[in-house]
Each structure stands twice: as C-alpha cells, then as structure tokens.
Amino acid sequence: MAVALTSISGTDLDLAAHLDAVSGPEQGALTSFVGTVRDHSPDAAGTVTQLEYVAHPDAEAVLSRIAGEVAAAYPQVTVAASHRTGTVAVGGLAIVVCVGAAHRVDVFDACRHLVERIKAELPMWKKQMLADGSHQWVGSA
View 1 (tube, rainbow, N blue to C red):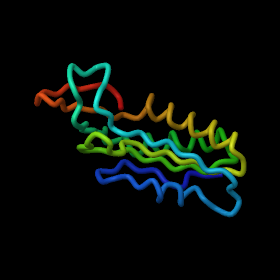
View 2 (cartoon, rainbow, N blue to C red; view 1 turned 30 degrees about the vertical axis):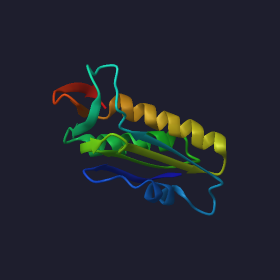
View 3 (cartoon, rainbow, N blue to C red; view 1 turned 90 degrees about the vertical axis):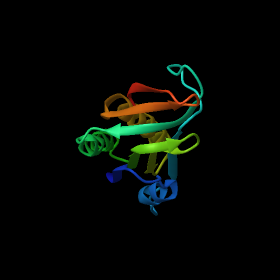
View 4 (tube, rainbow, N blue to C red; view 1 turned 180 degrees about the vertical axis):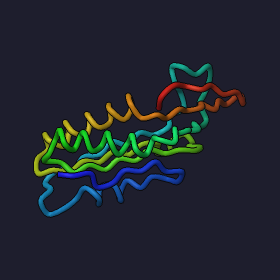
C-alpha cells in the first residue's frame, strides 16, 4: 500500500500516532514494534543509565528508502517508522515501527522485515552512558 510516516526525531516518539498512520477501514490487522532503552548491554562494562543516539545527516533519507522498499516488497501493507536521536533514558522509546494490512500474516512479516532492515542499515550510532559516569560508543543502533 504505502509509507505513511517516517522520521528521525529528537523528541519523544508517539506510538499512537504511528498506529493512527497505518490504520484505516481496510486494515484488519495492526502490529507494532517498540524498541526501548534497557539498563544493560553485552557491550557495556556496567549498568546503562541512558543512550545518546547520533544520526548521520542522510539517516532520514535512508529510513524513507528502507520503508519504501519494504512497502514495495509487501504491497498489501502500510508502514510507519521512526527512530530517536539525542538522549533517551532507560525505558524510553528508541524506535517505533507500525504496520497495517488486511490480514495478520502480512503485518507480522512486514514489521519484522522493516525492523531488521532499519537495525542493519540505518546510519545511527549510540553512546551508552553508564552508572559510573563512563561511556562507550557502540556501532549502528
């Protein structure tokens, strides 16, 4: 169907707005993926207190391209995806992906595909801030 929404945002992500963007009378199934900041990481040498996300200037265009390619691969779905930049505390939303379609199989498959592509291709880096005041840079978000 289409790409309803993509954004790289320095402000809080709104799950309800993403679900609204992929909703409609023809949609019998909606699904979402919400990635939150957790207090631990296999890369961290301590407790994580927050993450700082830094996006490449092309990140918005890359996210739009990825969403468009996934929507083209699953023409029966509508997709919405956003990723945070800036500082996000433990529990905060880092990524929101929503997919709507007439049937559940389509939304599950497309949602997973979109999330995996974003995680693999979006030029975004994160700095893990640790409880002891130290930090670590980690590759792509």
